[in-house]
Length: 588
Image: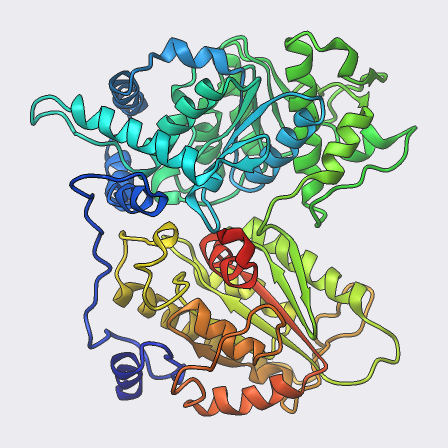
C-alpha cells in the first residue's frame, strides 16, 4: 500500500508498483480541468479544439440517455433543435445521400471499406467517424482525408458562434455535447463541400444516437454485434440488437452480417415492424467464386465480414443512385441458410470494388509498424469479440514472422488500457494465450501535461481515476498469471497456430510475466523501446524511469533482445496516443 502511494505521489511519470500493493486511493488529488473558451476566439486550430473540449460532457450525457432510454424521441427532438439553431432543417440532410452504419465491432472498418470503394468510382465522399486517434479533425473527412486545420477552424467557429447567438432564454441548453457538436459540424461541412455521398458511422448507440436524426439514408448497415456499453444499450445481445436496429427506416434497404440467432431475429423483427427490407450478406468467399481472390487492405480474418458488408452497401448505393454500369455482374442468388432473412445479392465485384478493398487504410486497426528490432502491433479492440479477433490476428502475425533457425532472443510486450464500464479482467484473460514477457499499463495520456495537445485532452476523468484504473488492470493481470501458474503441472501451453508453443526465450518461466504501470504513454514507450525505435527518439529518459527492479532488469533484456513484439490494445484512445508518438507526421 505504502509503495503505491509513494510512487504515485512522488513520481507521476512512473508508477511501477508491486501488483500486490495498490488497492486504494492516490494521495495527490489532481484533476484535468477544462480550458475555458476564449473571450475573443481567434482563428487558430488549437484554440478551436480547446473550446470544443469544453463541451466534453460525455459522462453526464450518457447518464442522461440512460434515464431517458424509454423515449428515444426526446433525444432526437433535442438534436433537431440544435440542428435548427445551427441554420439547418432535417430536410436539408436528405441531400447528402447518406450511408448509415452501426454495430458493436467493425463498424468503423466497414465505413472505411465502403468509402474507399465508392471513392474509386470518382465520387466525392464525406466520411464521419469516431473516435479520432491523433487529431479531432480525423472525424470529418473529405475524399478520405481529414479536413484541413483551416477548414475545421472555419466551420467550428461559425457553428459555435451561431449556437451561442441562438441559445435564447436560460431554459434552453446553450451548447450540445462534444459528439453532438461534431455531428452537426459534419453535416455543415458535407453540405458546403457538396459531397456526392456521406458515410456516417453511428456513435455508441443506434436508436438513441444523435446521427439517427437522419430520416432518409440511401442504405443502412449493421456490422457484427457483441456486448458493449451495457449501461446504455442493455445487458443482453437481444437488447443491443434492438438498439442498433433503431437506425432502420421505412423502405430503406438495410444489410447485416451473420449474427447469433437471437440478435438476428431481433434485427429481422425490428425491420419488419417498419417495412425495412433487411438482407443477410453472403460470406466473402461466395463473391470470390469464379474470380481472383479479394485482397483486403486491413489485416485479420474478422475483416472479411466487414468487407462483404461494405461491398453490399456500396453496390446498393450505386444501384439506387442509377450507377448501373458499376454495380457488378449478378450471379445466381442463393436462399438464406438461416431461413430468417433473404440473402443479399451474390455478384462479381468490379475492378473498382476490388481496388477499393485492397487500398483501404484504417489506422489503429490490425496495423503493423516495423521499426528496427521492434514490431508494433496496433489494434483498438475493446470488446470481448474484437479482442478475440485481435488475439487471433496477433498470434498468426507472429507465426508468419518466425524464421527457421533464427538466433537471438525475442520478447513479447503487452501495452494495455481499458476505459469506461468495460470488463478489463475479461479482456485481459483473453490475452493470456499470447504469453507475454511483460505487461505494461498506462492511461490514455500521451504526456504528463496535455495542455499543448488539445486534440487528446479528456476532461471527463481525473488523473487520479485513470491511474487507479491502471493499477486495477495490473492486479487483474497478476491474478490471472497466478491462476495459470498454479494448477496442473502436466498441462501443456496453448500452441501457436501451426507453430511452436511460445516465442519466450527470456530467463524466466512463462507464468512469471512481469508487469509495470506508467503514468503516461510516452514513458511507457520509452521503457519498451529502450531507444531502439529509429523514429521514436527522445533526448533522455526521465529520472526514475528505471527505479523499480522490474523496470531496471527488464531494460537490460529489452536492450539485448534480437526482436521485440509489442501489442497495443484495449482502447482506441491508447492506440491513438501511441500513433501520435510513433508517427509524428500524423500530427502535422
